[in-house]
Each structure stands twice: as structure tokens, then as C-alpha cells.
Image (cartoon, rainbow, N blue to C red; front, side, top):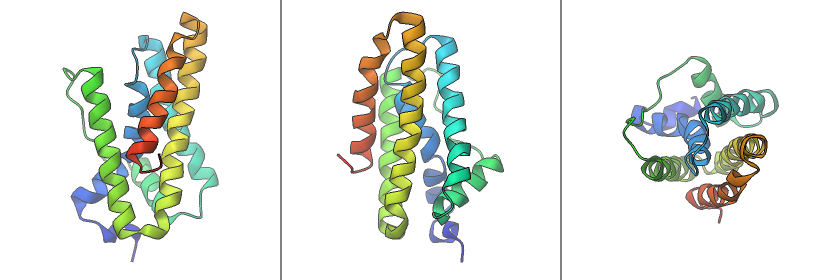
Length: 157
């Protein structure tokens, strides 16, 4: 039985979308220049693919990455949503996904959470590089706070 079978379709979607929402937590922590926001979204994709190459010990992550490669649909956040609302929604999504994995697959929970933190960290690193080039590093202040938010949502604070 595959990992996915432990969850309803709606629960699986919550878990499957978690890596994108981990990146969104970082992106919505501050205002980014349009080019920087695009770079940060690419950083999310890069982190997911990069971990696919080195994280084979987690069956859950393997199934999530495969679903992403198959281009399953993600939940869309309404374009009129403010950054603060989008940030809160992303954190709630992460919280719910972590809770599902904790309750149904506790043996996969730690690796799942580390993976989401690593995605957030890569996006933060990308944002800091971009802000240093574009605005003298002003964005760097939002990144540690967003990583703390992500850790708290995952129950790692």
C-alpha cells in the first residue's frame, strides 16, 4: 500500500501542496520586487527537484515529488488576497499538513518537516541574495521571522 492510501483525496492535497506553501510562507513575509518574487518561486521548484535527487529514504517525500512531477493541481490563493492574509493562509495549510502526517505517518513526520524547512531556507537564501543586489539587504529582516513562523507551524519551535 502506498503512502497516499493513508489519506483521503482532500488530505493528500493538503500534504502534497505543503512544499509550495512552505515557499509561499517565505515569499509573503515581505514585499518583493516582481523579479525577485519570480526568482523565489523558481527557488521553490528548485528545492523540490533538488531534494528529489537526495531524499530517497522518505517514501512520503518521494510520492509528493512524483505528484508534483505529474503536475497535480495546487490550491490557488485569490489574487486579491493581501500578503498578510496569504502568509496566514500558507501557515495554516502547513499546520494542517504537518498534523495529518504526525497523526497518520509519524515515522515520516520528521523527514517531511525537515524537507519543508529546507525549502523555506532555500527560498530565504534566494530572497536575501536578491534583496542584497536590489535594495541593500532590507528584505533580510523578514526572512528569520518567516522561518520561525514556518517552524512554529510545523510544531518545531
